[in-house]
Length: 375
Image (cartoon, rainbow, N blue to C red; front, side):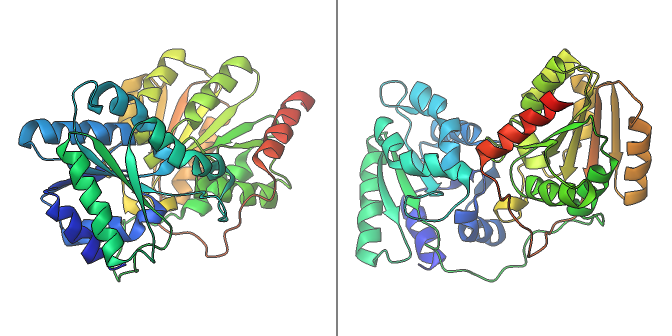
């Protein structure tokens, strides 16, 4: 499907505001609206629930519905504002949802998408949201019907969902988002893997960071049993790491986070600061983009996470932009027992042959817990 045709249909619904969290299934759409300035207002939200809040604000201010885009895993973040605010039993706020369908039954995808992919239609039905599935084979008549149904429900102050299958939109040429940083993310991950001691434990965030940590641990250490790969649940790795640090005070815990994940649930930083586990090193690999799902910029690409960490109560805070600075800070941190935040500014890009974990998520859990028990 030509993305221009799809965007034209959105405009015909009276939509002027687009908001959401980027997804690889929606990469063509996100890239197009980001480069073409197709709508008067486009806001990349911190998380999908926040995007629903933006949509509610749009309707209250203008009387017009907004379009909220997301990966289907993000539906979980929308349940509260959809049911407690937007639903017709409460305020009755019309919202058009655009949901990328990861883990669709019968398709090959990552393990974290399997269950949500299976229940996506059921979840929409439980929420009382009618939907249409958009594919690369959707005809003009079918698309017209989907948008006709959407308009009907939006006029009734209801929500409607367009569930987008992988490959629904024709790829377009675009310059793509870039930053000016020179240190590669995997290069930084490699330095961290080589710096680890036998007693250390790592919690790595979802996306390419975990994939890179998996490979670099094997290369530098010989295995990856020290690392818990948080393959799903974007934005929750720091809470997992914080609790492990609280319960295992004799071990050093390293949380490898991404800027998009950290932004998604940034209130967690205040909780970490309040808990103050002195054995936690929280590292944010910041490329100012949602790279694992296509490289679109985050909703706050200029945010200085080191300053946020300091305000949240982290005791030591550092920011580095090159390998020499990274090595120096890692060396300084080695002997410390102080809650530490390290922001590493990294470039965009990953190897074409970057692998994926060979074990299942459950196997990773068991080997990580055994590593804890054996030390």
